[in-house]
Image 1 (cartoon, rainbow, N blue to C red):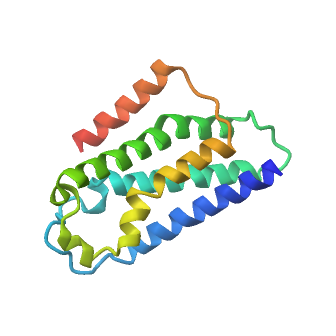
Image 2: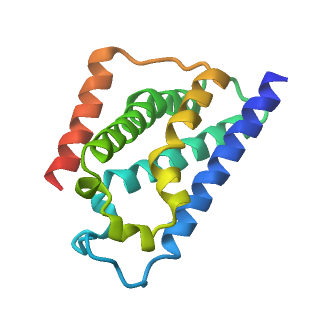
Length: 166
């Protein structure tokens, strides 16, 4: 039962994030409201990169789940565990907590009211709220093997520096 639940959960989460990305891609070409800067497009927003990261992680989880006759300790499983524990969970938590903290302080700093006409509320919550329950669900349905803290922090720090330099 747990294996079936895990597969269904991963397929559902992957489908959800694919739908969100497709909905965001459908906005391409529409006139941007004031408050969205054109330089860099959506690639400069950590929120957008996080949704891509979550979709990639759950896609990898689906592929790992659907492998027939493979042991759960294979290289794909280790890669999935590394991706979750070092990037997907910490970045997802960071995006959700930082966004809503700044939003509560001053909404105009992270999500100006003019953007409400461009992005419907469900997309805002798909990118800034639902990420957290989906990640907690992953913690419940799939045990992960975590890397050494120094390696995990080094990888996360390297990616963080790369993002900041961009």
